Amino acid sequence: MTRIFPEPLTREAFRPFGEVIEMAGAAHYTINQGFTERFNDLAFADVAMEGGATNVSLFLGQPRPAPIEIRLMERHPLGSQAFIPLQDRPWLVLVAGDVHDAASYRAFTCTGQQGVNYARNVWHHPLLVLDADSRFLIIDRKGPGNNLEEVWFAEDKVLGLSV
Ligand SMILES: NC(=O)N[C@@H](O)C(=O)O
Ligand code: NI
Image (cartoon, rainbow, N blue to C red):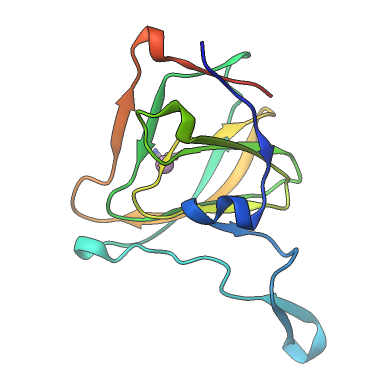
């Protein structure tokens, strides 16, 4: 089994796949009479394709059985998808440039202060959390058309994600 080893999430490393949503390193300015700092325009919610609109949801995620086996990957051809953790807990992200090329897979360990926005059509694994009842804010697309493409792996192509 091919194993994938996560690396710490950084804006630079994730750039080919979308944006990292975090305060660290982001431009910011003071608003609200000095009582709020705005970290502005951190990601592009790409949802308008084919009559789409913004969908704001909450996810309650559960850890997958360990050791984590990667049996599928998915992508959203009509829109981006942002995951923002609502608790200060580490979590995992897995993306791929080419879903059929194991060498193109990148895994990241994310802090509880880091969200990601998968750019439209980026291969990723569905939400991967490390703790029970992990809550996330999701910003993605609702509307007409099929916005989910999945690839399920044959048993001999299942990948291992080392955490
Ligand atoms: N299915 C769904 O809404 N979520 C997935 O797309 C995911 O990436 O977790
Ligand atoms: Ni998704």
